[in-house]
Length: 113
Image (cartoon, rainbow, N blue to C red; front, side, top):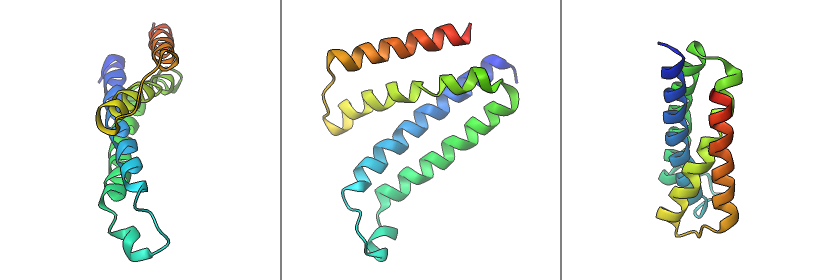
């Protein structure tokens, strides 16, 4: 595996992790102090599973790439979360969010060069 593969694996991990955030948000609506309700909150549990699953890919990427390169690339997860929030949670994008996404993309391009 080379550095490009590690970068792509990191981006893939951020995509899976963004879905983890989405399911944590959906599951948070049903969080209570009742332990039985907590362990049967399948959206929350699926979100946790997706975070753990994405960590496997990220750890693999770290094995083959430099942390100083790969860690900043994890900021791509903010882009995925913003787009998924619009699609699945009916959240709104505004010019500041689009500006933030643009700056993240520019930053990732600079770091990866």
